[in-house]
Image 1 (cartoon, rainbow, N blue to C red):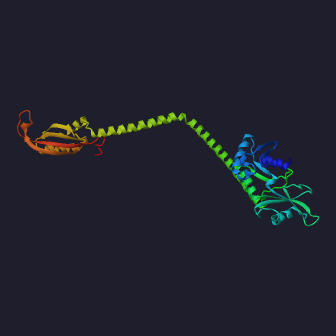
Image 2: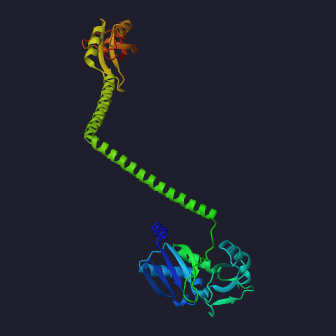
Image 3: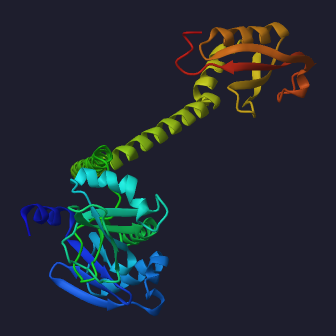
Length: 373
């Protein structure tokens, strides 16, 4: 094996040769060779009519023998191609290609454009008398002997489809001469150098994109792993502060409840009557000839008291209201109602006479706000 083929085999995979005839196929993979009989369905070259079934059957057989085909070439039986010896003037390879394009249809029994052909120099006496090779005499002496090999394009297409289903790249299709020797010819359609450049460029860009994708994916995965490690480290460092955070939350809730309770108590205090200072202020403001019968706070919880009593006349009750307004503990003191009544109705000593009964209402000023009033 030359150095070029060794490098190709290392990069693209070792080339596998598939030799076919009517009843069997021989697989040559490196130093390993396996000869496999065709099922009856594929005998007599019928495998060309069933490329999908043939590929599935061969794939299963190769898997049993642990053979993975990446590149392959087909070597067909001579009865699957048209072979003819002809005499022509000596031609170089470029001239032979032009002759195949313009003159081969005169000799090949296929419709033009439906076959692949090759013309190669042939030795005198090789294959003479062999029924598989036709003979065409030349018209001029001194002409050289050539072998014309032609293969239907539909056969090439079937073999290409077969290789694709095996997930292998088809590199060559050739035939054997009747003596069993493999002809040094490739009947696959040629690819122009421009098209080949485009194909290899596309494959190269695809490989670069795939490699870049793997690199970016690896970089992203590494960054994600580092971020995850950093987050775990921060979480580990914050564990001692979890108890502090909990205690702080409890302190905040306790402070909020204390403020709510304080506000509620303040509201209750503002609406409640503190009787000691109230009674003291009432006693200081009470004029002569005026006495009280009842003092009570309002039932609706408003900071206001109601005073019931009697006075010698109406002016005494008004004087009482004015004195309450002048004091620091009351506001809006006013006579709610007044009427005259006999003293005998209220006096325990049995004194008689007319007095003025009054009902006085006064608002209470919260402690600490009396001076501001």
